[in-house]
Image 1 (cartoon, rainbow, N blue to C red):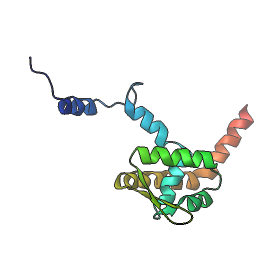
Image 2 (cartoon, one colour):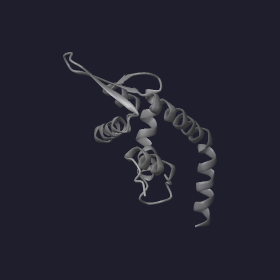
Image 3 (tube, rainbow, N blue to C red):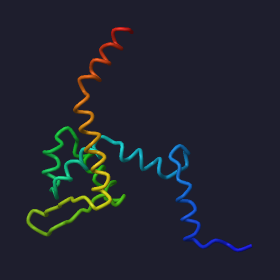
Image 4 (spheres, rainbow, N blue to C red):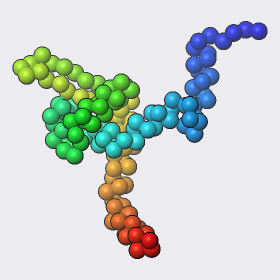
Length: 132
């Protein structure tokens, strides 16, 4: 019986990704990209490279800790790049990769949907609360 190469095993495992299975790594990725800060960062960076301070001003409701954690996870997952320039003070710029841009398009649509349907959601919430 022939043994599969590592590349063949990875290719086979890739076909089997199923986020409904608890052990599937795509489930962890879905958890990360469904975070509200991640969505807002991706949409903001779709406008071009931004410094940390610019992102912080663009998303004022995100704490420094949450913004930093989200940026690190996006960099680790290959969705954005972090460029440090040795100026005084040090300049740090964030920019989406092509993978990040492909996800940004989806997130921008979700953000737009939420903004367009917020009145309907509020009415549904009020109706539900009235029944309780």
